[in-house]
Amino acid sequence: MLETHHQFSSEKLLIPRNEAARTLSISLGKLEDLIRSGQLDIVRIGRRVLVPHEAIRRFLGEMQSRHCARV
Image (cartoon, rainbow, N blue to C red):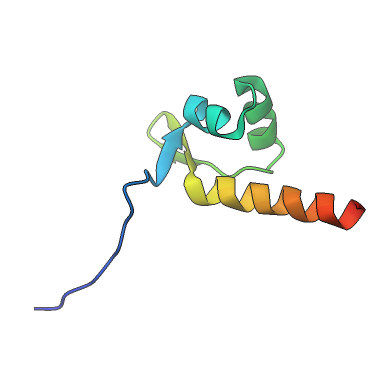
């Protein structure tokens, strides 16, 4: 039998938009703006729109890079 080893933390892989907005300390409207502009990736499952934790990390990394480039 083939065994695969995946190590998942207790962190959810996908979170709802309202939780993503809280995580980023922004309003839900601002989160929607980021999604519409393509700055933040989403995953659709049925009618649910979820934000991958990895997308939040990537967005924050890009924002940090932009900020550091300007300083």
